[in-house]
Length: 275
Image 1: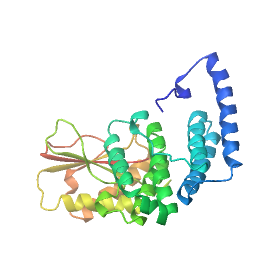
Image 2: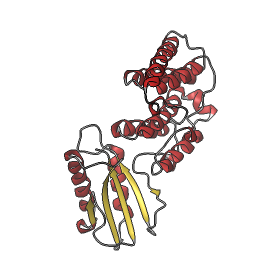
Image 3: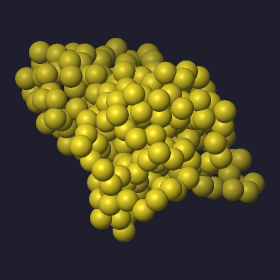
């Protein structure tokens, strides 16, 4: 998080600061645990979600974010309005920012007073899932956690009756500002340690297949989400995606795994897969 993230501090002073921060975090979290919720059903549900997330961050020694979400939970428990995270406050990877921006727009559109009153649990889950997604995306390495939070937002929005065009699920295409004239990126998430994509991931692949129907000059590249060297699990997942694409009619010769397009193409589709 941009606001004085403890993880950016090094040296002896960091030790003292970490000890101080851990003490503040534990105090804040304990205060939240022993606070009787006084807010609306939506605020109370949101408070519980933030409390559990703060406890998780504490276990991971992420003192700053644990304190941050414990503080949000306390405010909600005391009946104060707590807005979703402002993306300007976080160091979000540039290539992921468009997804989060669209997610926040969809969330704000769904968090109507009527939804918060009639569907408090679902509305709270939607806001928390977005905030969870933001925090995990800034760290940008625990892709299963990123997918879980992002899928949670999509599911919560669906439960609130958000229009299908507003659902921000893995695989929603986002134009990427790169030199190619027609370059589109997709995210396909897989559950932890599994080689079969999530339901949303499978839908993303099917969207790609549908978008390429009738196209001739195209290239499809399967890449590693977040960068890094390919692992055995990534290779297995990539082969599953490649097979699904081929079964759907995408030319096998046009598909490249973890590299560049074999031949120049007017249209390039990038598929990012977590590993």
